[in-house]
Length: 104
View (tube, rainbow, N blue to C red):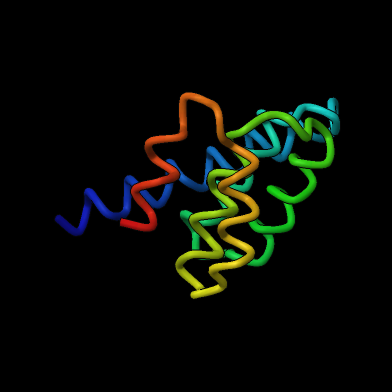
C-alpha cells in the first residue's frame, strides 16, 4: 500500500506540472486550468486550486464543470449560498444530477 501511495503522489505531481506547463503556453485554456486546479487540490493545495477554478470560470463563464467543482468546494466549507450560486451556474447541463446530489 505504501508504494501505491507513493506512485499516486508522484503521478499527481506530474499531472500538476503538465497542466502548469500547458498554461504557460495557453493561459486561456480553461480545461487545462481546471485540470491544473484539480491536480492542486489532489495535493492539498486548496487555495491555489480554488483560484485556478475561479479563473477558469472567468475565461469560459458558461462552461459548467468549474462551477460544479467550485460548488463542491463551497459545500464542503459549509458556504451553502456560494455553493448554490455555483451549482446553479451548471444547470441545465449534464452535471445537473451531480449538482443536486450535494444537497440531498
